[in-house]
Amino acid sequence: MKSDIWIIVQQRERLLEASTFGLIAEARRLLSRPAQDGVVVAVALGMGLEPELAQLGAYGVSRVLYVEDEALASYQGELFSEALFGLLKAHEPNLILMADSPETADLCPRLAGMLETPLVTRAADLRIDHAGKPCAVRPVSNGYLFEEIRFDDQRPLIISFIPSVLNTPDPGPMAPMEILTQPLNVSQARLKTRTIRIIEADPEDLDLEEADIIVSGGRGVGKDESFEIIHELARIMGGSVAGTRPVIDWQVLPYERQIGQTGKTVSPRLIINCGISGANEYTAGMEKSRLVIAVNTDPRARIFRFADLGVVGDLHLLLPLLISRINEIKELVSSQ
Ligand SMILES: Cc1cc2nc3c(=O)[nH]c(=O)nc-3n(C[C@H](O)[C@H](O)[C@H](O)COP(=O)(O)OP(=O)(O)OC[C@H]3O[C@@H](n4cnc5c(N)ncnc54)[C@H](O)[C@@H]3O)c2cc1C
Image: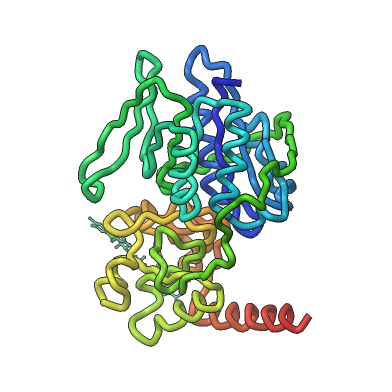
């Protein structure tokens, strides 16, 4: 078991985060070196995740350790770290991979403290040198420099990656995979802390790198009041607003809302690109998004090459229809 690589599955509302698939790809890359006999083990804590976990075989996971309990439905720092600590002590993997998130920002130091083991967060890369020794790389000084971090022989190593450096692989054919479901073996009575509720930030204020849903507008949207349609769609979808460089140059949005080579690199679950041609400098900042929708009047627009769903049409006609349809569905759901 020792040469297996563990990845910690992250989920939101019972859907796996895109970073989970990127972590599997990283683990597979590390295991593809010569003389590696380990497998990728995904570790999941939650409730009702089995349908989502079942797809991991197609990405190269051999085994899933799944601790299922209602108490794990949403993140609880002390409870999650105790549950993982139990698994880690029982199986003793060498390497544990995670992706940076508000949850892992809490989980990583807890686990590293409990295990008295090395931890690197905000990792951009993990390399293995000629002697087989791992070396983590991470940005410092606002990304102007990178530092290399080497380790002594203490194991396991915990490495948490910047989500945007992780590449989501395409699924392959479904391979044999076992899901080992286990009960939660932590006495909750002795825990000192409990998360009572999560207070969600206003998506409009959320850092784009953290955003789950982004509605992004380009020059095709137009200035000032024309851009209100983008804010409206973002509001009803609980998303964040972003834009291309021309929109930032017009001062319709502040610079921190720019996506692209000279702006932010984003990897949301959903991005809706409206009136955006898809110049290379823009797509460099959003190509790792999970589901990409594009609305453009020009059927040859480059953005459609990146889109899972492309709509050829005038956004000023389409978006009001989409907004009223979403509102209708919301009303229907709330009346049930
Ligand atoms: C060094 C350098 C760095 C750069 N960095 C960035 C960066 O970080 N981010 C960035 O975004 N750009 C960057 N750029 C600029 C980039 O090259 C493009 O010029 C820019 O991304 C284009 O923005 P756009 O898609 O909004 O505008 P356009 O390219 O003008 O595209 C507008 C699109 O809207 C469509 N459209 C028009 N009307 C409608 C309508 N009513 N409904 C639907 N569609 C419509 C058009 O068909 C067109 O495809 C950089 C450029 C350089 C040289």
